[in-house]
Length: 231
Image (cartoon, rainbow, N blue to C red; front, top):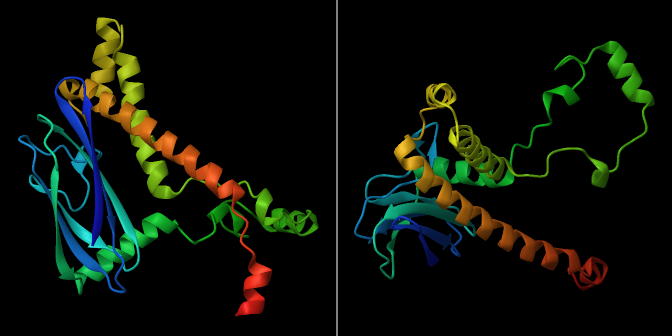
């Protein structure tokens, strides 16, 4: 199991830790990532609940065969290097296989077409189907489908909800603040600024890496015709 980590200091004595796990073996493997910092683990949350695999000590889960898994958490503690200890706990089996399948599904996205694209489902009737037969075909590159993977979209949505809540609380009147507090209690107000600081750092890091990968992908020209002749 190969692993890389990074640690970023944020305001307020909080650090952001990211860990990249790579499984080069042909089988799913279970891994344990233990926090070594002198502070509690603040894992990623959904609806105020820690995501699957996280506990007070760190994370435990499965990295798919030949795949990778990226993790990130915050911790109110001084910087210590390395911030984590990574333990390969061996081959995954049983329920672990289902965990690995879930990871792959989140990375690849839902293979099913949207319901509104299937005749008779999602409000499309016979008239719509008849009109669709006469419509010009759409090439693969012209699709209007959202290109953002579901896992990334879910994270961005959670960040957006926290930002919107912070915006509602910024310079709000007493009445406006009360409404904002009642509308969403997933993150306590005392933690919201720290979470938003961590979100800002994570967004900048993701944007920088995405821009770099986009540039590299744009210039890749795989010689598939030549490779076919060699096969």
